[in-house]
Length: 181
Image (cartoon, rainbow, N blue to C red; front, side, top):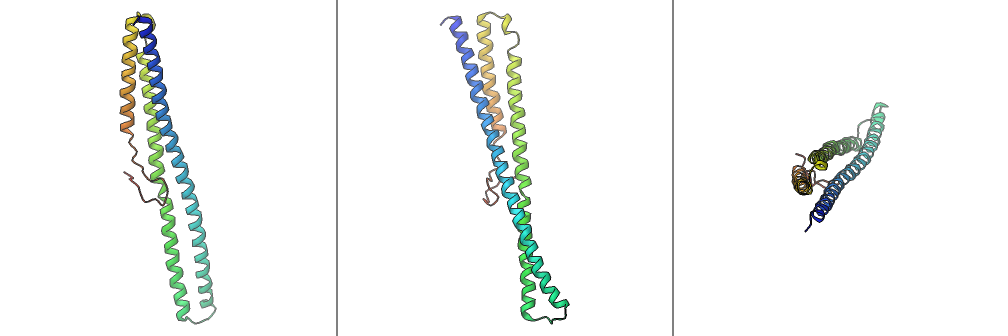
């Protein structure tokens, strides 16, 4: 194979690898951001529903208390209503707290996205640093440099991918499949 063909092959290989690895990491970023958006939407919906349910239960409880304050005597039915409202409020507060847990998951997703983008920047920076002086080299040195750059690109991309293993497995607020730490 002639030096020109080898050079063209190495350039083509470098650009192809750069495109493939860049696309892979950007797809992961996109997936993490979409998952974060979904979790935020579900959490906001859950919190809104919980707070409205708490308000309704407290209003119902207050109506019962107002009856007692107006002089009505405490009957077993009224006592049961108060106990039921208390239990209902506790249930809705627990549901709201579950909705607040999205912060852990979204924080992890956002943190991993930032690390992936930063790692991709380092990979691309390494490519730029590895390409300095190419224009002053002969074809054989350029081929060797491009081969080395391809190797570094592959190694850095694999290193980045393994460092950012998906630890946040929960895809929905209610899925129950989560590894927070």
